[in-house]
Image 1 (cartoon, rainbow over the protein chains, first blue to last red):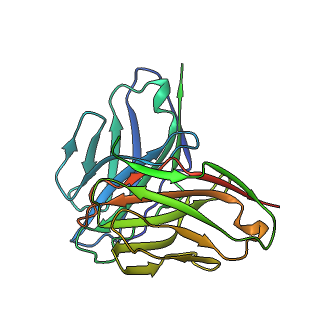
Image 2 (cartoon, rainbow over the protein chains, first blue to last red):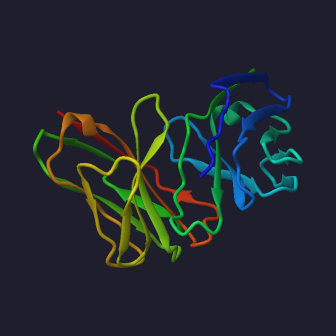
Length: 112
Length: 112
């Protein structure tokens, strides 16, 4: 699985968009980009995933660059409850090992 | 409620004791895995299973055993607990396509 690089911490104001970057310059053609978050000490929560097209769901949007070497998770209107550690993970959907390897993530602080 | 259930939520062990952390899911997920998370760190994969009767090692398997006799259950055994195994343990499951892992709420283990 390709490795990812994320900033260790970020902050944004409540109500504003939070844009979390992720670099995955060695991503392979069959590897998807997944985002999870972990609020305080709870179990990680799935947010969104994508291959090469931009994706949007009720939680967030995922923007993947055309060369797929980086992506950005966007929380359009951040709330205090979005304060969490956000993990960017790349892995192949056809990977028979189905391993999900977490990096150190980005700690997002949403300020009142 | 559908999901991943971990028991116990908290446990204190003495060095050298053995115990089993339980994990059960009722979503008919083929894939299950165990992670540990040390304070201030990301999650590290211990063992995983892609189906009943099939298990494999993750990043940090030493000191832990697993078995998968049914689709629903994936217990993690500590044969001889050590202080270095003090951590929060998370169990996760997903369908075989790797989409949308669901995590349990964790077991906080302290070894004294």
